[in-house]
Image (cartoon, rainbow, N blue to C red; front, side, top):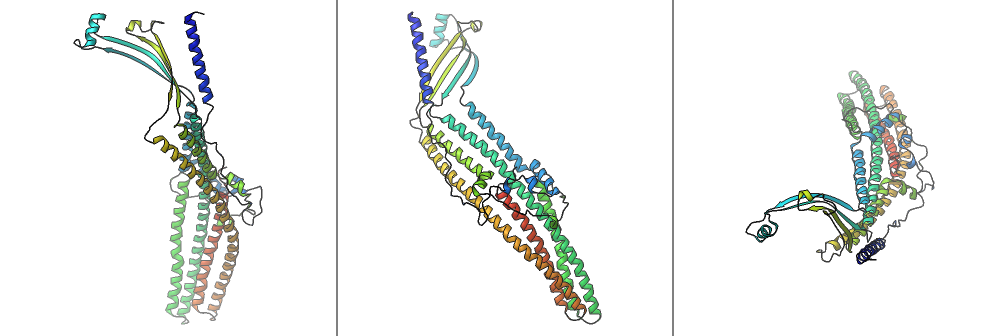
Length: 477
């Protein structure tokens, strides 16, 4: 082996040793791996027996059976602006994931330069050029590529990829959480619209009834059986019912506009083919076990993924405090004359270098970033536990609301029946002279409030069912 060959072999051995050392160091990863925090969950929700099934796993097209509501929800899922923005956030996060994957590969740059330097004739360079090279200027032509490759010694790039992936999945779950809330808002708004329709019919019916009572009392006044005060009070009762009509019409239009905006459309009328009385409730509202609920809710998943990203960012910040190992290389063509630029191999040049950089004093910037990352991870842990606790609370609240509203509905139905009978009896007794006009007016006022309350209780029942469905993570399927 010649001396030249020996030097080349020795140089190659050093390169191989350097690469092997870099590969060995890249197996090191700082920062702890993610572990889900312990959260104490109850075995079941209140008195409801634990069950494997949950209405939260039901697709919204199966849960809401009203055809008009299904069409409204379909339009909202396709056209809602908030949901569209959430889906764009997924694309944004996906781009960062691709970037984090590409960080493992070397960065490559290409450049081409051509310059001419004309020094002063009275300068040292000018005198040297004229005396030795017999020229007054220097030309330099370069065409080259540069390569830079950071070796992932401490796992910083891997932690960055882990954080980017968790952020991407978080945006995905965030979009599902937006859809869950959207479906619940549209359904609640639709049921509120049906309630307003029912209350408008009640008010209009009471206006007609009040008109009959006004005429009846006016006839009694003509006969000298009552005074003008009785007529005025009956008219006042009629005006109370009349005032409700424009109020309810206004509320209906506002609710229609709100639903139109949720679907991504301009304000306008909303089609509904059924009445509040025709909407049926689910016979059984199975919740499943709390552990299943927290696993099914998109917002809880998003909260946990935010914690995973925060945990990975701690590793990134910690790795930034350790030595960074990088390999750089450059090569290409270089010549003093344009005619010799592409003269190969004479114009070829190349350099290879390895670099280890240890941050020493960075004005405490790196340590602060590490400490902040740790605090943000602790905040994410608290946020995750809070989301789980809120999920259990929302399910419990919706369950007790649905249960107690059944009893309220029964009482409201009985109250309407009683008040209707009292109106009929009061009118008969008044016509027979056995009751005064105040009893008739009072009975009619009670009936109006009872019927309005009955419609409101039915709406709240439906809303409680929707709240339970959303609390169980339903609506995104």
